[in-house]
Amino acid sequence: MALRLDVPPKAVAGPEPGSAKKRRDKPGSWKLAIKRDWRLYTLVALPLLYLLIFRYLPMAGNVIAFRQFQPGGSIFGEKWVGLKYVTLFINDPSFWQAFQNTIILGVLTLVFCFPMPIIFALLLNELRSQKFKKFVQTVAYLPHFMSVVIIAGMILQNFSMNGTVNQIAESLFGTTVNFTQDPGWFRPMYISSEVWQTMGWGAILYLAALTRVDESLYEAARIDGANRWQQTWHVTLPAIRPTIITLLILNIGTFMAVGFEKILLIYNPLNYATSDVISTYLYRVGLESSNFSYAAAIGMFESVIGLTLILSANAISKRVAGTSLW
Amino acid sequence: MVNKTATAIRGAAAQGVLLKDMKVSRGMRIFRAFNLVFLLLVVFLTVYPFLNIIAQSFSSEGFINAGQVNLFPMGFNTETYKLILADSTFWNNYGNTVLYTVVATAISMVLTTAFAYAIAKKDLKGRSVFIGLAVFTMFFNGGLIPNYVLISSLGMRDTIWAVVLPNAISVFNLLIMKSFFENMPRELEEAASIDGLTQYGILFRVVLPLSKAIMATMVLFYAVANWNSWFQAFLYLDNPDLFPVTIYLRNMIAGVTTAGSAGGTAENVGQIAANIQSVTIVLTVIPILCIYPFVQKYFFSGVMLGSVKE
Image 1 (cartoon, one colour):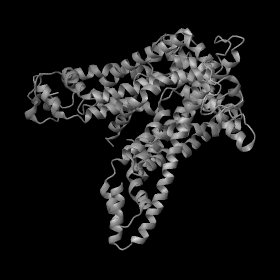
Image 2 (spheres, chains in turn orange, cyan):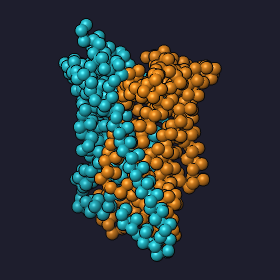
Image 3 (tube, helix red, strand yellow):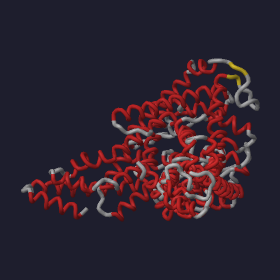
């Protein structure tokens, strides 16, 4: 610790070997860095090993998309087959249906689920009673802490034939709908439950940003004659804009992976026409039908699109708004 | 807020636009009333599904099947509770959830803390490579199939390791911790090293004792994620004795477990079938509902700590 390079020389008189002078002789050499910081490197070793095995090895494992794979054989497959599996899914109508559903659900999620937390945070911010604000926040965060299995159970329960939604439908329209099986109702069911689940907790970063808005800006706006709405538009929103953009980029990054676990739990063969997304399709192809290479090809396609989306969103936002993740 | 309005009115009066401002403040009052009603509605809609599930779980089959249960139990009945609470698989699976949560959280905390502490040192050589390696995994991952193949070929199927290892480091948590360590006053560590402490000594005797709040938050983040997780277990565990309780519930929802296979008899199978899912949901939700009010403020402070940097 005493031997940090940017520490002023007088603080460097530490007990460890190797003086400040020596370091200035060969700045930046690995030998010196290891000699000085070997304890830090031992701390890094295990986490790095973890990343290599559980994160980077599977990335390399994607080569099975281009190779024949034998269950129980090498994780990198047996022999090259070129673009066989890629052409296979490009000509697969089920894949394109899943692709279309993914895009539609992704866009609906962005349109409905992304703005809600911003509105919710702004409304909370207008509350005068801090106690009531705390109470609303506490309740609204609750769904975030529930397992997706529990959420799925509650969705299926509420939308079931004798559930609450049908009770309301019956009293209003005198008819019931099989929401959980009718393909036409999957998207409303998915999006409304997603809003229910994410609106509260999603507001938390905006609320954090709102607490840091300089009070004197409002003061100045009021002196200029701005009313409450104009203050929100010209002071509050610009203040949380970086947060909005950062979260938007992150949301775009998860666009392709829309609600995989939740959909897997609530969909069924009767509504595949609208509910089957790329990730659930590749799950069935890969793990239920054991077409590992085929599914890996689809998965890689999905990951590459996801990465491209987040890189472009980041680049565009950097140029247009001056805010970016890195 | 009251002060703010008062100031606004005074400021406006000074400018001779009192009349206009009165109008605005009436609009403001209407807005506040709407806002209050709207937020109360949000509260109700958030809580309703939970209340509904609880009501269903205590209702009798006739009312459930007729679609008459909403906020309150109808025809109070605890038949299904008795059945589930007497099911040894249920308790075994609950125990597994506790075990997996404790082990996985411990592993995650050790790895995350060690990594975060090291990469928070701005002059550690190779630091940017380490950070880059971690952050890249947030945006690109190997995907389901290669992961599945890897875990299987490592021989981790049907072992606890398939559940507790693959998601040991959350990069999001790692970055929160890193920015916390970066914001610690350097003088503390410098003083400690002058006193002859090594980097290990500084970490264990100076830094960690000062990081209790962030450590508590991280433990909560990891514990909740592990308590709720089901997919790893679903993929890699075949032996029902190893299932966490989320899988027990999942099999119920997916119809793998039926009223009959859960031990319903001829006379109560209708009742069991009517609310076995709600009962299981309630029983798995209870621990979270009980501790949630006490720990939720740590989640908020954790997010605040993590976002302060920007």
